[in-house]
Image (cartoon, rainbow, N blue to C red; front, side, top):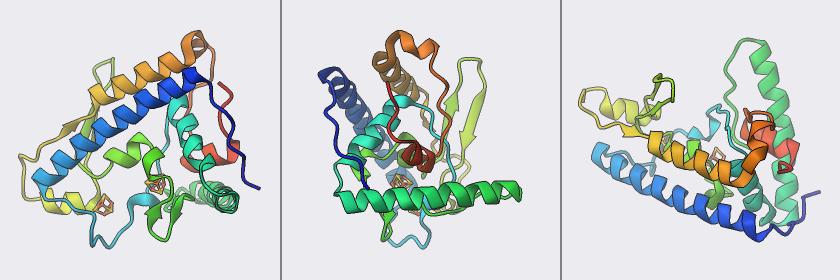
Length: 202
Ligand code: SF4
Ligand code: SF4
């Protein structure tokens, strides 16, 4: 059965509001960059919701559950059933040394069922972007396959620096967790694992 909506404290709601504002900002950065590249999802023959990602914050995990709980019970039950299958099949693929390529359990008929609550990586994955870590290491992400095709002949393609966006996300995470951040285990989960686990107890 689906999980009923649990009342969130005013404090959590404030963190959610900050996260929603940050998500809006990500969307604006993404749209500006996609426009420059000429990237549009309309008519895409692929669905990047089969990409295999881990997510790393409690606040996004909790907010995702806010979106899930706002769905009807039967739909929540479908999400959870698909999430269990996803976890099992991804473990099997990994055991064969294959990168899983499975449809996200929250995708229904090609659409994200929790669009407003989808996570940072879902929002930024399509365009080339980079992330600079505090130790100076820089990780580069090339964007989706369609974007890579569009930019293959364009060496001066703009790259979205997701570092300040990620720093804001970390600040919201710290605001949510306070002193507990030092003792809680690091989050490193696929979205399906976040569903199967249930909302984090923070
Ligand atoms: S982000 Fe890229 S791969 Fe995903 S739907 Fe849009 S165009 Fe297609
Ligand atoms: S949460 Fe939504 S956007 Fe993200 S992978 Fe799942 S269906 Fe796609």
